[in-house]
Length: 535
Image (cartoon, rainbow, N blue to C red):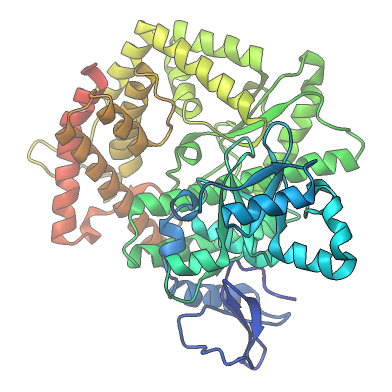
């Protein structure tokens, strides 16, 4: 068996000889095909006994040579557009004529709502003609296309597409929006043109996982991946996006497995549409290397349906815990009744939060208002978000309460600019990230901005002329400085066998980095007031 390891470019046998290599255009080829094995490929050892510390060392060695391109860029940057689509009932001859006119090698079959169902390619045509002759042209697109079609979201990183193309041996991958409507296409050849080097293949082991145990490998690989990407010059913000995307995918897969297992165990299909939400830093796309579960469920069912969603939430949380994502100490999880509600009950809860403000409800809002749907009915999640933002924006007292809360947050700088620490450490989450993130959230809600990422919220405020360009630049810079210092501290602690936390040791920083951190905290002291109270 192969070691479950999501970062693969070459496979080696037990004698340390490469026997397969992935080329993004031609797929897996053997070591006897004249491939040069010295051009930046990543080894994956073969054998039953490759586990434990040995496996981890192999992973870290591989990650040390990662090409960062697939982690820097998202699919909407590299996909080809527009994508050619056709209803599944059109004649195949018509589909081929349109492909020829458009000078493309594939057509995506869609349903009446425009959602991707299958794909038909030139290779499919050659295969059908060879087997059936011209008679096949009388059939419909839906009869001959390959289904279901492999798809990937446009906001996914390139490494996700590369992994999926590897696992399924695909030459084409359809890029879709959140409603599964095709908006672009990527091919192995196109990706090679974008990056003129041997493609790094990232196996999508999350999609392959059948249990929480199967999900442990990508989680265990995150520190090594983060270290490598930082060394490659990838921004800390991009690294935290990669970590957050992994957590989102894991949560989605855990929900999918829970739903499948419930059907097999006699629970039946979902009683009504629902969506699984990831909250907090995972929803913002800003996850560091210390995380736990923050998730919720919204559904269209009635009171009698809660037992089904409760079981789904329980299984979801259990699977993620088995994967290595700890249960939330504050019980912000879909398995808890407070975080599992119908849409109408969520609306009632949100109304109570914004019109009966308490410190505890503000803490709930800090987590909830950053949510992103990862599984299920995305339109349902959008409806919930629209209501939540609209209702919060109507309550001047709620917005003022949030603003005052931001303005009162400390930044852990002494009177003469020294760092205020406890046992030599500074809680960077509490004294740097929290005011920065909270200020962005408060201003975004006030301006009816749906974005959840901190930088994206500040970008939107700048575009609306609600934030001065100098303040915008400094806020983005402060965010990057703090994230990078926290990531590097967590990696250093993990390397020393110390559990990673949100606490940093200013003494380990070089002179220039300490200066940058001191500037960041000082600037944040001013900017949080401007953003929190300045309206």
